[in-house]
Structures are given as structure tokens and as C-alpha cells.
Image (cartoon, rainbow, N blue to C red; front, side, top):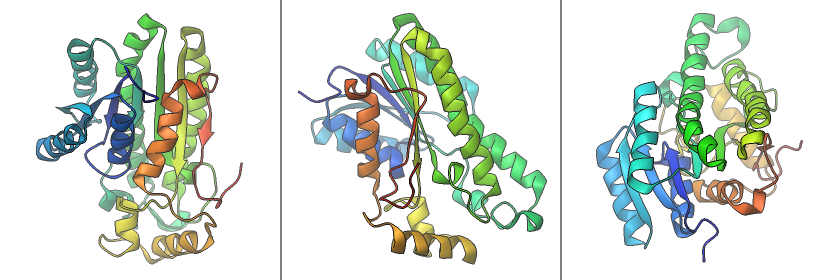
Length: 266
């Protein structure tokens, strides 16, 4: 029996990248996966692939920037599957071209503070709105595991990453606060902080498939060179998420795990 047998999991941003890797691992471990993203075409393709491999999945089109969409996603999941056991807030909520723009990704005295605060607000909402939507159902059942996927730039100071430090660093501390608040309800909240990930938008930027500043690309090159255990792919992050979703981590809450291949230590 899989580690997540009988559990129902919502994964935002699961039509590609890290979210898709998490969806594949969860389905393989027996979870019913509610795939969510903005593209119905991509969502249908993911669900079809998961079912073809023997998994249980459905898709709900939703925008993580919309409170109404997130509330509807949670309500649909309970109606269709009876419960919500796991939430993985993976969707960034901000297109790569926005987060990679020199106006927000650069040395502090060269960036546009107004643009930075706007991106930070969107990135933060993309994590908090899904969690806010599922918590009432988890509190009622006194059970649940929630996790954010964010950047290791929230734990390690990195030149050119004021924007990342603001939203990811804030999310790391927010994980502790909400984890403490929800512990009495038996709902766990943890965080996964990642760096360069293969088969993801960050990897596309590193390979030059999407626009990225020279500083940003040089940082990714150093990461690839200096991570002694190598670069994780989305399914590897799915393994970490499986641990946090399962009973193996039953006593872990308010924590941040950094699967950076030996690049960083905390």
C-alpha cells in the first residue's frame, strides 16, 4: 500500500514543473490528486497521464490569485472526494518573465521598488489564498498536512534577490507562525525551499529558453557546479512532498526543508 493511500491532495500549479512532479509522486503513492492550474488543456493531459499510470486524479481550473477560485477549488474537492488531507501550494502566481525582469531581479539600488512590491504581493497571495481556503475543512476534521513550495533565496542571502528574499523569506517565517497556530487543530504546515530545478521554468532560464539577466544565469551556473549531490528534478521534490504529506512526518510542523543537493545547510 502506498504511503498516501486514501488521502486526497490538492496541488496548485500541477500542470507543469515542480507541481507536476509532486502530482506524479502522490498518485504513485495512492493519493487522489486534484490537479489545479489555469490551463484546462494542460490539466486534462496531466489527469489523463496520471490515470493511465493507475492513479486517481481530476482537474479543477483555478487561478491562485483569486480567492473565489481557491474557495471553489476547496469546496469542489470536498464535494467530489469527501475530504482534503493535503495541500501543496506550488504555483508561483507570477509568470517567469515578471520575476526575471531586471526591474525586480537585480542589485537593490537598480531595481524598481514599486514593481518589487507588486510582484511580492502576487507571489504571497498565490501561497496564502489556497491555504486559507482549505483550512476550515481541515480544522473541522482535526487533520491535515499543508506545504508551501518556495525559493531557497528566502533562507540564503543572494545578490540580486531582494524580491525573492521578501516573499520567500516571509513565507518561511509565516510557515512557523501558521504551523504554531494550527498545531492545536492537528493541522501541520511546512515549507519546501528549492533552488535550481531541472525540467522547470528555472532550468529553462538557465538553458536560455526564457529571458533572464546575466547575473541570474551566472548564479544558476554556480549552483550547478557547486551542488555536490547534483540538481534535483520535479519528481525528486515530489519525494520530499510525499514525506511531508505522509504519516512519516507526523511530528513535523512549522519547518522548512531545503533539498538543494548539499549546496546549502541550515
